[in-house]
Length: 174
Image 1 (cartoon, one colour):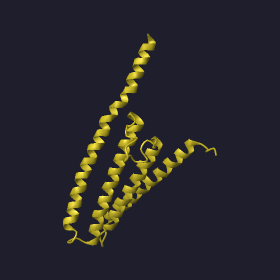
Image 2 (tube, rainbow, N blue to C red):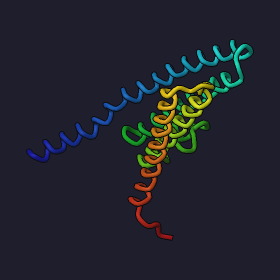
Image 3 (cartoon, one colour):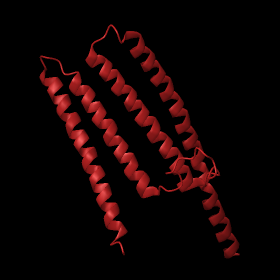
Image 4 (cartoon, rainbow, N blue to C red):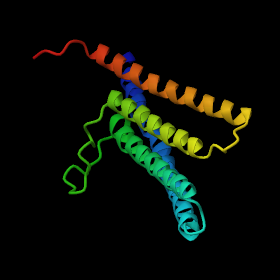
């Protein structure tokens, strides 16, 4: 009897991975929401490009780049997460299948996520830097300082994640 209970429990636990699917579908929906904001920002930027300053156009473009990076990150998390935790995608023969699909493990996904966060943080920092007024206030300086500190925390986290992964792999044999 304990064997059948154990088999049942293992089957339930194994099938529970499908509970992650709604999370991935939610992330797909979030890409659609991000697309709406991207198009909205692109239209706004296009309609006001002539009447705004060069720095405002650059900030708008950086905002578009930021959204594209977030969208790419979400897509990478959806594809890799689904393949790592739920099931293999049956698109191996598809001509448009990205090369990285099916090759990223959890460790690689973690590093790509932190790398994208660092890039997004850097873009945000650049936007803030470009928007510094000629007469900065103490509040502006404090905010900029905290954004730099946060960005450096992301950078250091990425370095430490990479080091931990390298250490956990052990020495490579040639």
